[in-house]
Length: 179
Ligand SMILES: Cc1cn([C@H]2C[C@H](O)[C@@H](COP(=O)(O)OP(=O)(O)O[C@H]3O[C@@H](C)C(=O)[C@@H](O)[C@H]3O)O2)c(=O)[nH]c1=O
Image (cartoon, rainbow, N blue to C red; front, side, top):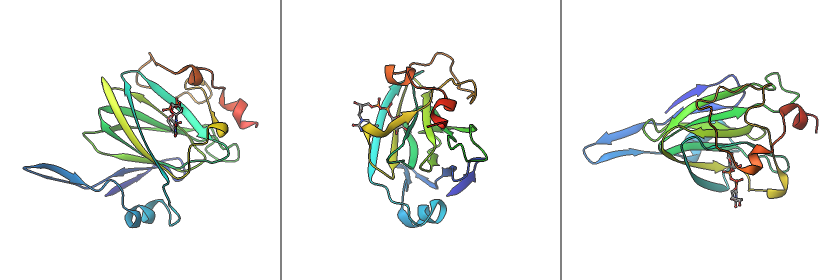
């Protein structure tokens, strides 16, 4: 598999090896030994999630304060623009973001370590994403920042973003950075 590092520490894009033949294709989407080599030896996933959304839907930008989750994300149908944001005020890259198009065609993945904010926007008519998490969902510790915070200035592919009421009410980065 090919690993592409990004400007955010620990955020990597993974391009697994895909075996194609007359029946279709095969790939390993996770195996502990190889991924631990890249993502760190203490890697342990405890929860798998799957969500489906339609074109324009934007979920994010989310993080958890009490149980920060590392996430290994892939798109199993359609295409999304997936984003990680550095929300650590002590970090040299605080406020910076990286984005990658994930698709069922490319079969690529992004790993986002604990402590970053994560979100994605759907480009195709429908998209399914699956992601493995290093800690459990903790509703009482949910946090995040607004998708269009001008201080972060993410270049989302579609300007018409469809958000949940919860995501529409998220604060700006400077507000969560002070807590
Ligand atoms: C995230 C999550 C939600 N839920 C429930 C709560 C709620 O009733 C329903 C939908 O939740 P949400 O609106 O928060 O789902 P969603 O907006 O898809 O939240 C997700 O967004 C992406 C960007 C992430 O990075 C994830 O960590 C997660 O925060 O599912 C769980 O039971 N377990 C979970 O792990």
